Image (cartoon, helix red, strand yellow):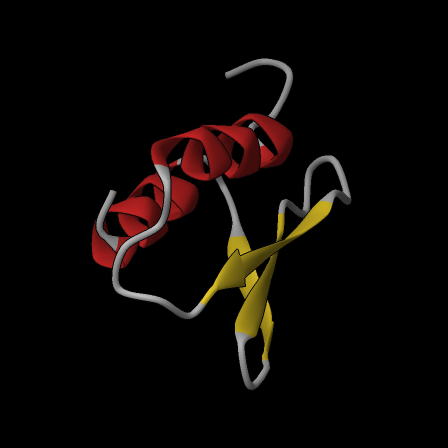
Length: 61
């Protein structure tokens, strides 16, 4: 999955950027308080992308 597509889906799920790093950016869902690192690569493996989205989604979504 392209990183831009993943970031768009994270935003739709309610995730917000909390900090940028050298190799990863950290996103948090303010509703649940869960944080997840997102690699700063162009391509992110589909399995990893699904895991990140599953962690950042609100239980009601």
